[in-house]
Image (cartoon, rainbow, N blue to C red; front, side, top):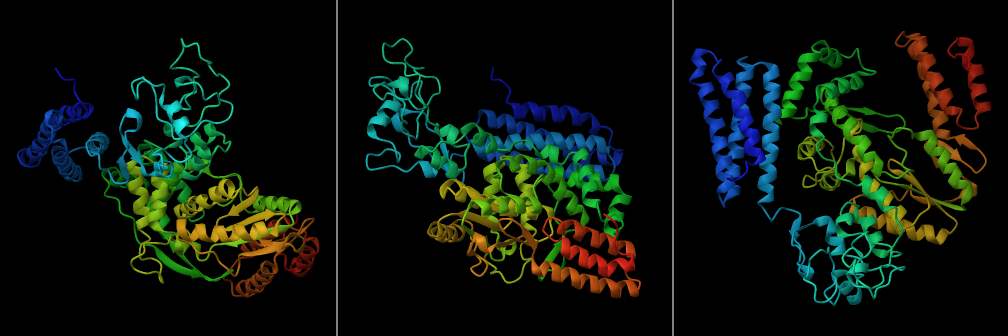
Length: 592
């Protein structure tokens, strides 16, 4: 007798749990809604059993998936009419979600032509399987029909000794041997195993325990494209660390939509805006709002709301998009789960919107690099947030996240910005709203590709980035100019971005550089002139607002105190003393 397929067992469990509840429906609905639900439940079970024995599994699984969607809405009607409890409906949603995942995975496994994959060539008689689009960089072949960088002699050695059945006890490698190994060995010195001479234990040949194993294609698949290319070229990389950082994220959707996470997200979203009307309305019916939001996320009926647009003009004109409060809760819920996992893959010297980083640490690091080099390239991306390409961003997320439900939610958040920003062609889906938590995270992830390119490809030792502002330091002005050309080309071809030519310039370190509101020199730093000018203008505006009763003295004191703390990170003792003498008689400044 054939063993029971897991998806059949899971749905069978759902049927056993639900049938007794249908008998408790009101008499007028027992032969209408309850009967329809019972028929759909049994139909799905029959279709899944039929798919186990049928050769045409895909069509049957599609029918089962359709019936599962019908079941979701039928049970939702029963919940809204209070025929089943919220606790029972929650349990039903979890079971249906698991069944839907299993059906989707089963259907995908029966389709060899999945988008973004191609059949792997059967080299050396080894096992044949799909190759990801990320492996195409390492799948190029030379004139001898072998992968680039692999010699004929190395390929023969890695495929095993002559006369052995091809593909037996071996794996294909995409890289040639490295120094330290004796290539006169056969299967024993293959670059595909960390266990030296595993296939030739009883041989009289040299075991070659000093051989340094290469990365296998399975290992390289876990590393980003750029890092993998360097592994093939023989660059020494901490493979264990990189593989750990680039491991696909799986099975996190239940954590994202858990009640504990949603309540925490609601608390975080309400900080600083508790007394606004939308926040107060949500908080007044917090339990019902969280339950409704969770049901929508479980059933995938959640749709992002419309943004409210407004403009700020300090320090420059920007259009800010504010999401509805319930959507901010979703932003925090998904961000708080995936951000710690993806943050591990960011380079150390990326300072924007990260815990333990920030503006002042970026300034400290920049001044440290400034002291060690003669020249600096200050790069800036032109209109960065409105130019982020949705297709490229979704591809970066798919490369790191293997949870389809989480990807669905993230893509819905990204798609909510379509048509939001003016001035872009209709055919191009680009742009993220400024002011959203997820937008900051997406923007940081987007330019992480540039970080890897500059650090690993261009070998820039002194490099740091704060969102779309980045600095590269070096002692050779010619090298920096060449790097600028390569970065401009990379941004245009790989990320669909444009380098701001007016702001992206090369400076001498002794002349100082302007970065994040500071003017940095080797031995000291000053506040940028426009920063001081804006603060003095704000003080004059405070005087008028205080006179008209539109602002309190305490609010003015808090604003001044924040600026004073920020100014202390520069050599501004004289400036702070002069401003304090002017405003202290009004009692608007506290003691420090």
